[in-house]
Image 1 (cartoon, rainbow, N blue to C red):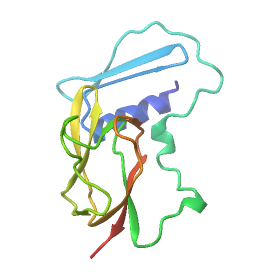
Image 2 (image 1 turned 120 degrees about the vertical axis):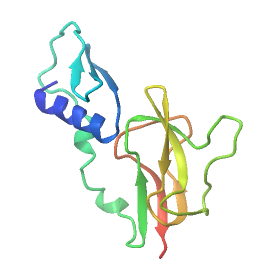
Image 3 (image 1 turned 60 degrees about the vertical axis):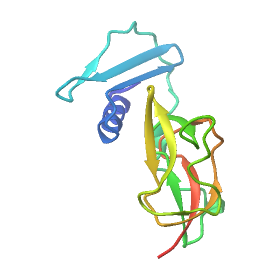
Length: 155
């Protein structure tokens, strides 16, 4: 893991107000904690040699443009994951989903929960429209910037 990847992780933590982040990849492990003043603190972890070409972080790929054949229509949008975590459609296993296909949403409508580091984060639509498609299966992991819902925008 190089310095640029660590800087991207810290920026992601600040944007999403995360206090702790841990990543284990190919025998290496990094844990970053933000202290009370917001400064990053690194835990001491045994260093293991990384391969010459480490796998890219999801943070780095989040800015990639969508595939040309998957381009949504001009009147549609995607609700994307603002963080890495586990996607849940409902507030509890026995509760009904927050929204279903065909449901109208506003910018403030809660559409799902993403669990990150044992914290349940309510995710709002941030767009006004109608849900066209749910793109993630309940209980599955999501990456930063991963589309979770497709929405037909309305005025």
